[in-house]
Image 1 (cartoon, rainbow, N blue to C red):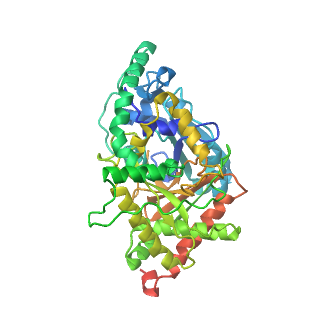
Image 2 (cartoon, rainbow, N blue to C red):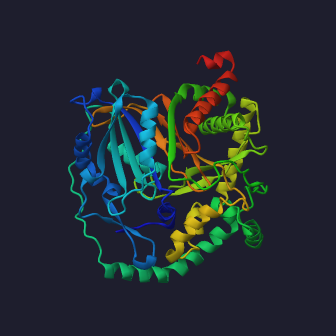
Length: 490
């Protein structure tokens, strides 16, 4: 068995019937390259069974500790059956992107069954040009972006012919007894004070950089005083003091309690254009991605008369892994950069994004890589779930500040063609999760020669997500228009 970390457990703890802790990816495949010209649920089931010995997360079942005396565990599921996890759907032919997105939003709103391994695959037929969509859904406690990339590198092949996989056997699962789990829970009770004491000096000076805590009254003062006493976290190495976030985010319609319904939309944009923008302005691809998100939010909120005078603030997950992504679970940190939505000029907005991300990275380098996990160690496991849910709801109160307005995630993806059971992957759209107080997530993933954008939000109004995607397309075009003619043609 393998115990979840407190950060892994947080993605389970926030679930309350409206919030779900899973993430998804929507792959669009061309089955014409497959051996029999088809990509079905049966095909995928057989394909996974051939590789299941390499995919430990798919075989792992959640085991709770009685009375929540300690954090839960993953255990090999002795009743694992891949057919329980793969299902087939049809949209009315010819299914367009809007019909597909409606089905994805519906599936996104449904929780996973904790009596089985926490993942599903939905195979969707009826799309235009004979394409097949494969929607992979798993709880975030299983994997983060980097371990998810490792997972897909095992599942996908670099050619339609596939690769030879060495035969193997999966471990024989045996679930622990209640007595064994109670004993583990008692041991956890003994260990918890030591975990908390070990985390205290690492986390306390930086609690104001934990998004869910930084807006609470007194946290900033306590963290500042601790930094002064311990003399930590204040230097960039050149004698300058690292600034903390200057102000909380302005409140928007995304920063309230979410419903149990979702809206989703997606689009593919040119990688070549993004690289031309990056090269001309001497910034990074991620700078361009964040500037596009900032421009989109400015346009979208302005059209509705809701653009705040202050810049929006984003949460940006980043990897703090020390391995190559082969282990599952979560090893992430959070950047909290301002998005200059108050800047009307696209080029200046990009340069301000670059400065904001650079400052956020400097702050991040000054804190422990395990900050999010260390902060969770202050909460006893017995009340962890209630505390996690309470924190998300507290952030929606108009009496409290807003730590961030939206989440923006840039996930690594393949730059060369990849295949699933012989079917070519043509697009790979992220489908994130939303929380109370954080009702909008924008995900980006590289796939071949395009960046695939996925937008998920609470269902505020009809077609909200599609109008945000349109604003994303406009924001990229504004940056392209800011290039000299010679740069646009390269």
